[in-house]
Image (tube, rainbow, N blue to C red; front, top):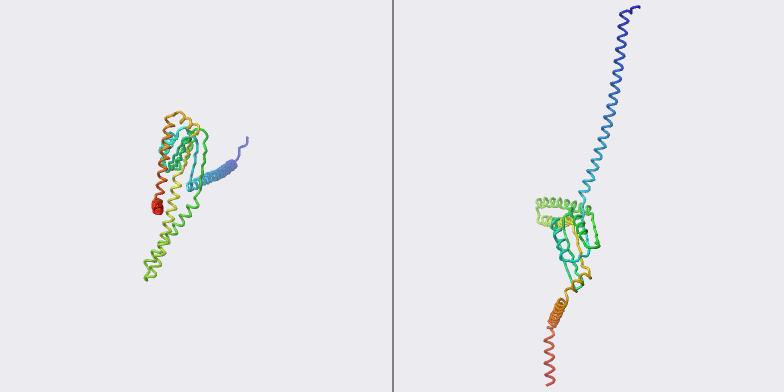
Length: 279
């Protein structure tokens, strides 16, 4: 077998070596392209996630900045007004609220009670649901949510503008040299101060209504329940009520006659003239 020249063998090795380098560079470039594509896709995913989180934060901030006034009404029947009212008071205390109005009236046929409650907004639903579940029979429920965000922001803007005007008038008052100028500035300043006080009062009113919800609870007994209770009390109960009504009638008659005291002098004068004329 013929032996290849050494020069030809060397050139052949160089060609194989160069071809290998070209293949290696091509593979590296392809990997780099794949890496860049993957990195771009990752950036797009991250941007999408950041955008989603930003939208969530925006919605959360918007909800938190809303100024809402919540009012509720509950109306239902009970068997015992006193027991039901006691439960309402206990529930109000547990939910960090207070009673702002408490009115009860009763007669022989029925009893009626109205309790107005103020409690934190976060406890509004808890109170409404608990009271509704523990009521006897059908419950009339009403919830009203009023958005006063626009009015509240308007008051804040007006307050800031009024305070800036106050600062300007105070500066003018320091620079005023004539009495007439001082009086004019003081008059304007008093008007601005009155406006500031009025706006702050409105903001305090809204803050009270926004921070504390108002719930009105109306409770009434069934007529047949009260009538049955009165019937079970028997003769002595009816006799006691008869004496009570008769006594109240006498007291009312005395009060009515007392209102007529202004006529006594005229009656006495008429009797005097009548006797004198007859004599």
